[in-house]
Image 1: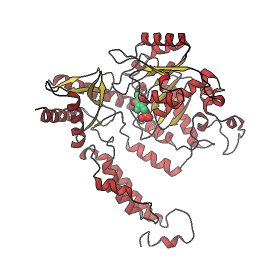
Image 2: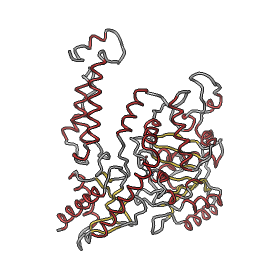
Image 3: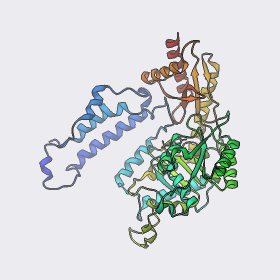
Image 4: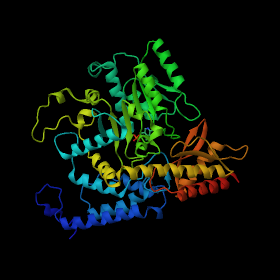
Length: 487
Ligand SMILES: *Cc1c(COP(=O)(O)O)cnc(C)c1O
């Protein structure tokens, strides 16, 4: 008997639990085995493939009113969903800054879903596991015991929240009641900072123009002298500078601003020092990379993503705040300060919902805990250092190939280069075509970016699975498609 045939057998019970747990168990074991194979055999598949129109169309059906057997829905998953995923599990994926995830993280997600914990608040172990991650990040970053932290979707959210904490610190708690009231706040970041840093000023009601984009030097690091000048000019013009964002790993080239110099400048100027450490800050796990991040431990706030270099399965963004009280004073509802329960499930205040805008939230801490616990900080640090070694191997290969040229220095794990176009051809257009050719070939997935006005093929080695041979294969593909188009 199929599940559909048994539908009547629910007999008034409104529960969504299966009638037959053994059948569910059999389906579940198959799914788990299939997904383990999916990860273990990822190299046998293309990195990415376009979604055929007929498959895309299958997701335009009307709302299903009746039941569908789980096995049938699962077939849709195996046939129509799994093959057309982003591709970032694959070692050939080098686009943007995407982590590869792990099988351990996948299992942790399943366990978290089984507990179905709402980690907004109350006194249960999910909250304590999240506090364990806060304690570990404190230790890693050299932050004081008073520092707080909270899981969020990603660094876009964490950078936005950091700006709000800085704003509340600058204007006082009354800003939460009365709004900005025309206060001419200005914030500062390198022109190479991530777009979400600009977006944060927009979302907070300061306006994008309030985020001053400061030029960067040849190493793609913020020009500190230009920053000082702009702050002085703004003060003279009646603006209220309040925040400087340093980048620990820019998204285009992986450049790290001089964080120690920015920390000193912020101390001198009385400004909030925020670090967008979305992917780079976890470089603190590697003794080889940590010295490049000197100054990070002096930040007032750090945005970071465990789902990038940390390889935690999506999503696992995080905001760290040096002064936990300022963090709480930015987000906690007035009623949160009146919570008096010290016993029972309603105890355990303050809660994560007091440190951000989310009330209901999942158990992101569990997959992060499993990842840090099972691999350990040293192995994760070595993996991170290895991605940088792969990037250096790629850089050396590009330098050896006369048809290729480097477009930016390699600081960490990001390599920007391109195919030299024959005279009279549009190099930007040619390289954009090469990138799309490689995507469609399924061989690799670099992305592109613009460096000094020139389109670059950009390989960000974030995935722990990517080897020297994988980047060589990508370069072979660049040469093959470049020669085919230019020749
Ligand atoms: C990825 C990234 C972001 C945005 O983070 P999300 O997790 O994608 O929201 C911000 N800044 C930098 C430097 C990044 O690499």
